[in-house]
Length: 512
Length: 85
Image (tube, rainbow over all chains, first blue to last red; front, top):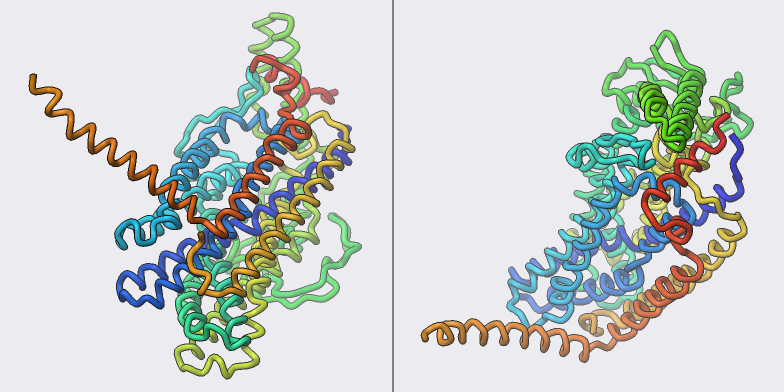
């Protein structure tokens, strides 16, 4: 089928730019809100004013991050309506409820507990203030649930049925949508990685103070709390990352094959710990996918199927089929998808002609192949393969950094408790850049999730090229560069205000 | 005869709560220093988003072309089957 790929690609680039910009702020909000709650809990328990100062300082940085980041996600909704109108209409019934709940929830949370958190010092009781801080932390994270339910549904569409009358996927089971295994694993992995990100941010700022010899006690105390939280969270991220990989293997095997650079499926498959992909490799050819690689035996089979000797399908198995492993290739799916689209077109025509008998017949035929309708938009089996290099490298960067973070937290905690952290001149610069490494891991995670699921907007049901509006690519190009300018300005504003506040230090008091 | 007397404390306590809430937010906003700068950024950002971007660059594509859900559904169905041989 013919589509304007430049429009599709510009729309994708714009959405990716907005989502990645939005995601600079969200993980910090998710994690820093809990760290503020921990700091304040220690203050309320010990009644030590130093902890109050620490709480107020981190709360101020939390407030700055929140203020600059707030509403940047709304731009994504604008883009849905303008650039992705087919998609937006088709999923409207599924996304309406979760996004409305998120909006209402966020509004009430921000109007009440957020205000108490910043305006309420000395005006409400200590315990109510602490309760409000905890509510902001819990509420911010619950807000993320609904967004990730929507995202999880795109990766693994469940609990719905396509209604050709309305051209919409209509929700059949709210329970299935909310407890979609992809959504659950995505929420747990995303929020806990946000805790790691915020802990790294605390290490970064505190390391800077220690290098400068300023606010040493505050920095050390902050590091202890952040290292414990970061260590526990990063351990949990590794644990639930394993669950995420298992769910991806079961629901999106092509994504797993791409992030591992696995072209030919294997029994007792090893995982690639590190490696450089062969840029000339194409699906179906006999070239080695790697120029160089280091493998760990059996681990991919264990990760994907929880069995050391299981078979993990590669890109070639998934697109060309593997009879021995009972895997259907993409070719037959494309044929069934095209039949589904033809039946859908016949249904539309029959309805236009008020021929209800023909419409019913076409609908009955459509139902037989509706699960493959997305494949009908593909021209050849290779179209179902994501750009392998991007998710592969993003995944390995994320995993490498994710494995490094617990070590960083453990070393910081060890030397802080030993009382010799300030003397570890080699360690503090690592702490200083750890926040940037955290951001890199965060962004890589989203690249894995979103590029790895290409070409699908809705997995198996709607590819990105059928999801766009009928616009000219130049329209999208203009707004892309406009966003680039706007986001750069906002980011510079955040960095400048944040650095100024960090430079002032805890004397700046609470956010006023 | 006793009804107004019973209601008076409730009305007074409600008024007091509303008054306290108003004072809480008024004082909170008026005492802001850094917060004022952040609120300015938020308001400018919301203005740019909702007044400039939404109105001039990001109209809802289907809403600008169609009025009813039926028309929108028909159009999308047309779009997703337009290249079917």
